[in-house]
Image (cartoon, rainbow, N blue to C red; front, side, top):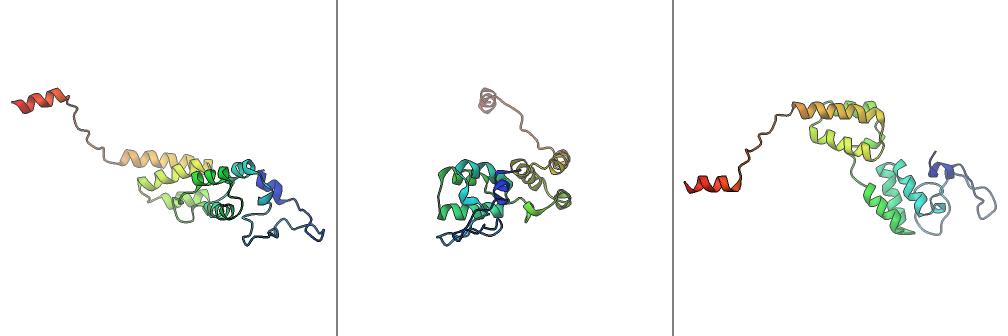
Length: 162
C-alpha cells in the first residue's frame, strides 16, 4: 500500500457537506485538474515518496500540475530525477512477458536501457532477471574489440628517434 492509495479511499466533505467521491477530481479554484485524487492533501515528502509508483505519463501530469500550482522544489527535484523517456514505446504499460517479447530481437543498447529503466522504476523481478541474462548473452555474442597494446611514452619516443 502506498501513500497515494491510502488517500484514494478517503472522502472529504465538499462545500455542501456531502462526501466527495475519491475518484472525482476535487473542485479547485485553479484551472488544472488534480493529477490524482487527494494530491493537494499530500505534503512534499509524501508526494516524493510516492512518485515511484507512477508511470511516465502520470509523472508528466504531476509535474505539469505542480509547476502551475504549488511549485514545490523537493517535488520538482524528484520529478527531474525520475522523468525520462521510456526505453520502448508504451513500456510502463507492458507486462513482463510483453517486455521480453519486445526484447527478443533488440540490440544491446536497447536491452541496456530497459535494464536501467526497470532497475530505477518498477524493479519487477520477472523482468530484471531475464533482462540480465539476455544482456549477458548479447554482450558475450558481441565481437571482442581489440585493445591497443600498451606502450609507455618513453618506449614510443625511443622508436620514433630511431
